[in-house]
Length: 400
Ligand SMILES: [Zn+2]
Image (tube, rainbow, N blue to C red; front, side, top):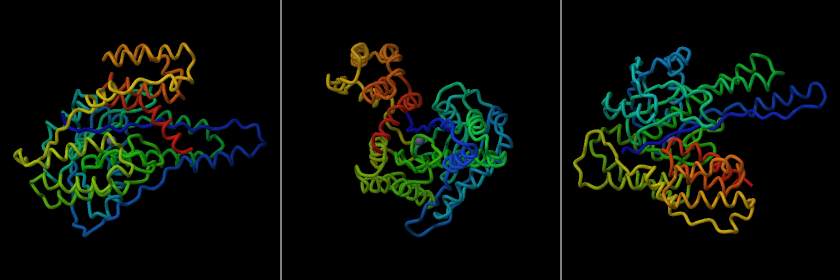
């Protein structure tokens, strides 16, 4: 299985306090909320060495659902590409959209759509193939599966982000502002999201992996505070681009340089540990000269699902101390779910734990169990969404 990475998005919620204060204060408060909700400009990557100008040829296929959902789809895609080009301009890289065509595919899951795109469109070293899919139904979840890319590959898939909910929230909560102000906020956020999602997936094709820094576009969840590549991911991207610009056939030299860059960061930095370890394993296998070099390297690694379910099943059981915060009934449920997980019955564990997971959203212990069950029961893309509650608790904890 190819190494793939998925990007999800946390739901945008404009939380506004109720106003019982004096007339006029609501408007000031809403203006401050507007400033907070406005995304930052995406930062350019600074080059660490000599720059060789390189143009990457982008070929886009858009499904009819995508073009029905996105007004003037080619123009909006170009707008995102322009932002990406600004970010990459310091490295001398230009992404040029050479074709934008209709894609008649029955695939609607990002994983299978990416596989279909890969087998349909062969890529040269300076090509990028992009598949655009319709958005998920609005009612699906509070976490959207928005994109997928081949790590160190040449293909990526993006969904049209359905943001009717966001427009509603802005209309409802910022009603004291002018229509122009609200529209400007909606547009600014839409533009930022489209560019950040594209950057994230392009990042994966250039060897960037997830990190959990809040401003990083390689954070696994989208948020409007994402502002650019972290230095350690920028280093990986620059190395891959330099190799591609030189049109080298050997992937082992690229793997060697990427490994050296990863090892320089070591266990410090903000890389997500699991991703870093998988990347290191992938690069180590690519560096080995035992396999004949292929013109378009197709890295293989163990499936993320397998390794995470193995981790989930070998985690030590919770101690009584860990469960002290829970009521007796919840503690029994916790133990039952944990036992099912240990017996390798993740589907039954999920069923048994669902109600507990939902009712104890603030409990780290419970949300940690939920995430482990999800990792064992579901594919990576769904599991990472189910783990979002845990990720949030962890982040809040770190900020205290
Ligand atoms: Zn990703």
